[in-house]
Image (cartoon, rainbow, N blue to C red; front, side, top):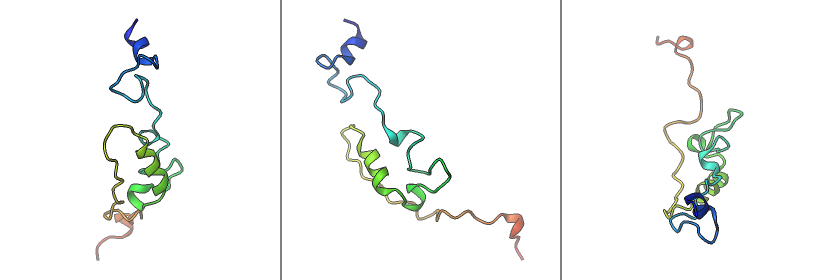
Length: 91
């Protein structure tokens, strides 16, 4: 039996992973994640706090044995684009 067969066979799968050697489909690590922003340019959770429930569910989908606590959104970036320097020079 090959290693691939052993890892992908449900009765012979790896005890070290919940995915039996397969690559899991996890949204939090993909372009579909709303953690930092959306495909149409809207602010994501990390800057504005939007989509908290969706992002939290995506992060909880990781079966890594770690306590996955969603951090608070950034207080440093209000999600507003600053004015361009050339449009707003010092006086």
